[in-house]
Image 1 (cartoon, rainbow over the protein chains, first blue to last red):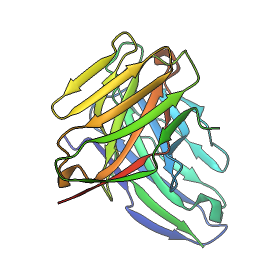
Image 2 (cartoon, one colour):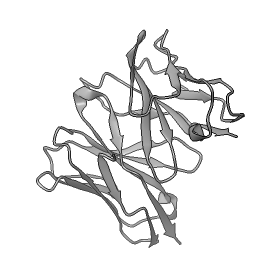
Image 3 (cartoon, rainbow over the protein chains, first blue to last red):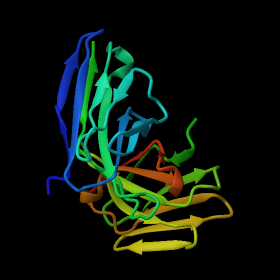
Image 4 (cartoon, each protein chain N blue to C red):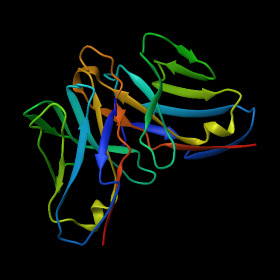
Amino acid sequence: NAGVTQTPKFRILKIGQSMTLQCTQDMNHNYMYWYRQDPGMGLKLIYYSVGAGITDKGEVPNGYNVSRSTTEDFPLRLELAAPSQTSVYFCASSYNVNRGPYEQYFGPGTRLTVT
Amino acid sequence: QQQVKQSPQSLIVQKGGISIINCAYENTAFDYFPWYQQFPGKGPALLIAIRPDVSEKKEGRFTISFNKSAKQFSLHIMDSQPGDSATYFCAALKVYDYKLSFGAGTTVTVRA
């Protein structure tokens, strides 16, 4: 079991460029999440998905898009990158939170810099 | 608006000492309170969690104390070791709402 994998590990973007952060999990989890982590701010939820074909906005969705065509994959798309999107991005997954267990499993993160 | 307030921002403790991190929340609908541990360059990983029907949970050297009436919970790391040096996040979840709310994090440094 690889768990949750993310690519790339690092990326530098120029303002206005676009990119897709990849996330894959091999635990057959229904739920998947994207967070961003900024210094001293904890983790903020960007988007989440409760199953293939179903996505919804989290706390800070502006400037991002997601899709969930399979159980395993949950890519995050940045359109027209801005310096405010400089952050570390984490993908996570969990079982059905209504039944538990509620643990979220995190990937290793993608460090993105927009200049 | 931070739904879970965490303090202190950082702390330094000597090897063998006790590390204490405090969190407070406002929303009484929260019903699951995990703590995550994060090492530099890694993603957070679940350390220990508690439901509000118990006041304390212990796993090894890590203990959560939960005060439902005060809407506060804390993490105690007993006999702190250099390998415990990490950032710790408290969090809260409304089970049927799917979304974890994280505290801002506490960086713990254990000096040998």
